[in-house]
Image (cartoon, rainbow, N blue to C red; front, side, top):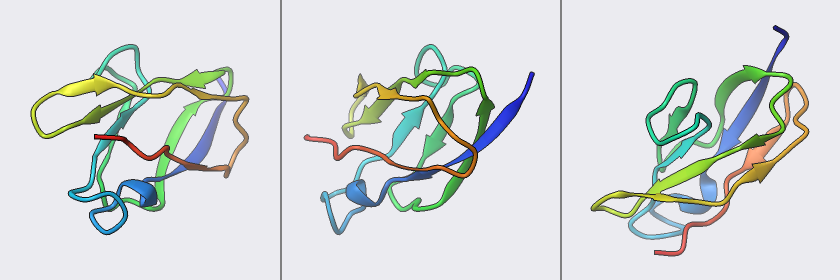
Length: 90
């Protein structure tokens, strides 16, 4: 297995840009499923190592009550790529 590291940027969902802010779960087959990662509403440069064969990443966002399916992020991904997570519409 070959891996790459991508950078997740949740700037658009910070408390200042999308009050009250939204954390997002990225990757995995379901929310909180490995090998996914939790991206906090203040994360702007979170490193996430994935298998280089991954062609898309699922997302889920927390609306204050529950986790909801978000937008799928399509690859291919390259090592060191910065991925700006989409703004969540609450």
